[in-house]
Image (tube, rainbow, N blue to C red; front, side, top):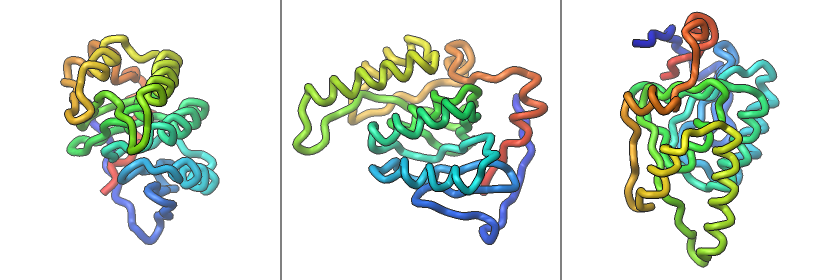
Length: 190
């Protein structure tokens, strides 16, 4: 079992931008809540306040896929560790952020499902967006079995990966040496 150091952070020291909160001492950004259309701008603002960020902690039910893809590209380009804490959920579009981490650990629930068209959206639009998600997952090295679960789960349902799947499908991606250094510095935010 992985053991992480537990940090408590005073709200007085945290800065919040939309659904992103910066924890400078831990060099972490917390996403708490849905991914919205303006989330990429909020994320960029949080990043500008924390130039030495190492990790992003994910607590989100999902949201706007286009915004998630934009944030995920930034996470991936900065080689950030992505973390879903024990007792928390990262689902739907949030999983795109999770999979963008070069190092990633899902101690909590990680869920995927099919995309659906928003009001007035078209099947063609969903297919173009799906192509973007598949390209991103290919770039992030996501196992094809993850994609199969995503594509076979109705948008009204959610598929949550088991602990065994997280390990054998390389959903969790870190090395034992990273546990003592990088992962140990990831906060358990309260």
